[in-house]
Length: 205
Image (cartoon, rainbow, N blue to C red; front, side, top):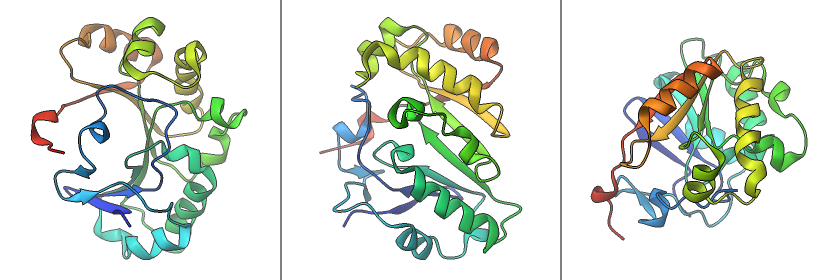
């Protein structure tokens, strides 16, 4: 099967699903099945919590453990909760952080506010926005939820601040992404902004 864990620097990333509620035109998975030209992130099956715990090994080796990969991790909410709870209790990793990279559509997907369920389990959440208005979001991210998506993501960002210690939004640093507008929106939402570099030229099919 594909890689269920991979490293970037001293962070361990968990690849738990290839399902996603967006079809972003810029997504690296449209270019290559391999991330960083080495880790095949296309899964033959979605790993269980037990498989992920075994693959993580000693979590204290890492500065952070991140639910990310080639899909939207919060589609597998119960798996995230099980793994994060195990990391927080059994492994006792006070110096390490547990983070989720998400598109912020989990409440739409589940039909309820799932953020209270992450309280005490997740230290940091990075919500991919990549647009500052609904029209641009539709064009860039092609969300399955259509026009509901962008306002729902904004609500998700605001709600995240009630339950998760560190909340930030991210945008891929593409030529048509208005960075000053992203910075202004982040300020209005009261969260940090992370601009992500885009490495398409480094990827091959």
